[in-house]
Length: 123
Image (cartoon, rainbow, N blue to C red; front, side, top):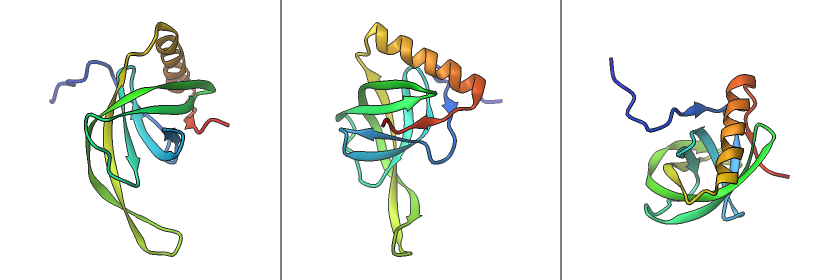
């Protein structure tokens, strides 16, 4: 059996859960932990770059800085015209979260785990 190497367990989210980087780049969040997240995006992101992430997790608004740790082609998705769009899969780690941000993230993760509520784009 493989041992989990992550510093914090990841919580999977329901397919179609979304957030935004820089308030203009939509992302689909695949999983998340207190330390980072895995997401899909329509354009490549440079590892080492940082972006503001905004999302609502289990009804708890969250915004925080994310450093991209990796980004590579992850597959294809259908576009509006029935063609195929290359999708990138990126991993990121949260950077410099305040205690208030961490508390909110922990609360949201505990609600997400308990209720199955997904991440949603903030309104």
